[in-house]
Length: 213
Image (cartoon, rainbow, N blue to C red; front, side, top):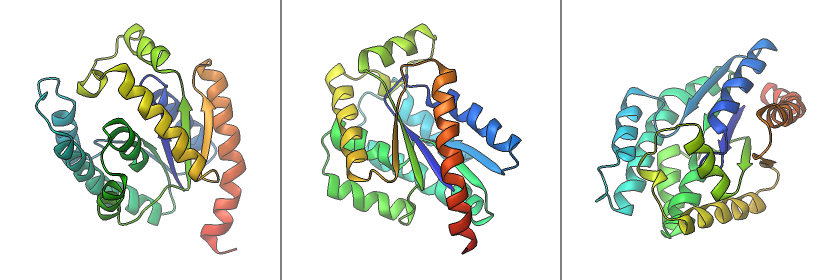
């Protein structure tokens, strides 16, 4: 089962994935937890370039191609092999981030982004996508309070992040069966309880489908 986590900055995705992965492993599932950009040796090098605060001259076209290059490597090297082995894959961001950030945030052509993404992923889509939603102001405040390093993508105007958040709403509305929207501005324990409940509900159906039952 391929599960992705999306959301604005400071929504708590990374923390929740670690805890959920541990929970699923305790229940006997084989789990791979990864992230975008990065997740591979090549992808981590691309991530460093994308997040370098000194790369202010990076144009939007270069940005999307670098994200897609990292994604192509991750899909080929990590995600597809894990899924083929019957493992659960938890990924911190995936292709929906491209639509939200570069499509809605940057205003790039969404049809062109969809074509680039299909090429990079071979058409691989998640079975389930969690959107951890939080207001832009609250999310950025969280990052600062937690002392998290601010990268190049964290230094956009507030209006940019508002467009990203609205983009996520529209993406979720277009595929409601795949998306589960959770309020990320709650205690980590409450959010985690919701994540576990939804996974526990979905996993039996996925097992039946993957086994051909």
